[in-house]
Amino acid sequence: SSVSVATSDNNGSFIDTLKMNVYNDSDYGYPLIVPSSGLQLRTRVYVEVKAVNLTGNFHVLMDHCFGTPTSYNASHTEQHNFFTGCSVDQRATINTNGNSKFARFDFEAFRFVQHREQTKSSIYLHCILRLCEPTKCEELLN
Ligand SMILES: *[C@@H]1O[C@H](CO)[C@@H](O)[C@H](O)[C@H]1NC(C)=O
Ligand SMILES: *[C@@H]1O[C@H](CO)[C@@H](O)[C@H](O)[C@H]1NC(C)=O
Ligand SMILES: *[C@@H]1O[C@H](CO)[C@@H](O)[C@H](O)[C@H]1NC(C)=O
Ligand SMILES: *[C@@H]1O[C@H](CO)[C@@H](O)[C@H](O)[C@H]1NC(C)=O
Image (cartoon, rainbow, N blue to C red; front, side, top):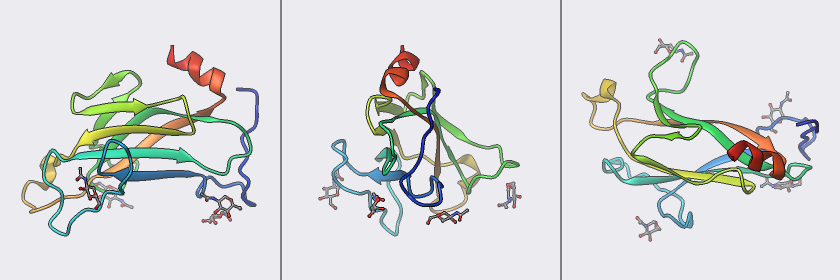
């Protein structure tokens, strides 16, 4: 909203600025380490998206987070929505959103139907989000 977002990195890309990490606990204290045998179904996975090294004071507001069975490309449409706005999947929970430099949600590990023949399968996580000034984020949440 009427301000510029800049990164303190030299080339202006957001590649090093937004980070997504997964944890195994609700305190977001331990990085999730996936054993070689894979995660048990329904294991809770805690996801954090964080903004670092921005020049201004912006909060992270997740609009839509989803999982796909392969790395995302526009022609690939199968996806599982964790949430879109206020509509949250029953197996997912939004924990922190729009009120700090990080946003957090969690979900239960699941399998895509198309992977049913495989002993384990991958889930790629994606989030569409905004960086907003704290007061603007608050407005958007109301
Ligand atoms: C900008 O920097 C990032 C991280 O160093 C790099 O991955 C990316 O390719 C760079 N982009 C351009 C357009 O140079
Ligand atoms: C999370 O990982 C840590 C370190 O590997 C481990 O000690 C802890 O028991 C794990 N917590 C859960 C809930 O699995
Ligand atoms: C933030 O920027 C500083 C200086 O460019 C760099 O040393 C530091 O690693 C960056 N922090 C993160 C979390 O990327
Ligand atoms: C994109 O997804 C389609 C459909 O699954 C797949 O056939 C294609 O190989 C994918 N393209 C890339 C670049 O991964």
